[in-house]
Length: 294
Image (cartoon, rainbow, N blue to C red; front, top):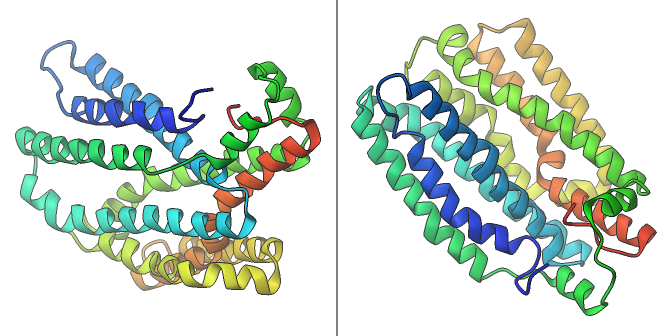
């Protein structure tokens, strides 16, 4: 509980921690302490700094406005930026940057040092030019301030919140398994090691529908309903993944399967922040207090 809100102060902390922990990932000492340094820097970056930012950034959408239409547009826009950035990195890094830096530790440090430093001004911009209108409204109502145990008790009253948390856990597990296996799969199964083409095609062609989804997501959900769009999308994704599983070494069929998978995940990808906002609103409706902090 601060004058800046609930999530925005953590954006400010992340502005400092992300650049520092990002550079520490590549400042590995030689000798017996190397393994501990790698472990420590990875924990600091992934478990602390990155998670800190991701949590606060995700909360900014439901806290920015209580208007359903504005929240929906904001969710699509914000998630589109994440996808565009991730796709750009996935295309540029293996084809342009990786061949230039090779296995030179100094070059790796310079590239990621610059990348980490860029995070500082961008996060400051996000902190300075965002606002938690929902938090301000709740503070004006002067409701009770609850501890984590009381917040959990309130959250459990909302079926929407419970279902969404289970969904988040399953989706996070699937996305992480997919993300960490993609590099191995493209380098050692689908293509040849660091050929600069397979991984680029995998991301560029496979995720191409996500770009179109920025425009189509809200109209489709308004026409057939959000629930039907998400359930139908997951079934389409399952068909796409089945194609990839049946023909794991055929680049054309794998790319076709990835395109089907991407088409199916458009509603769930772009509307996940909207779903979170609605679940938190449902908690407030049932318990009378905001539990965004939990």
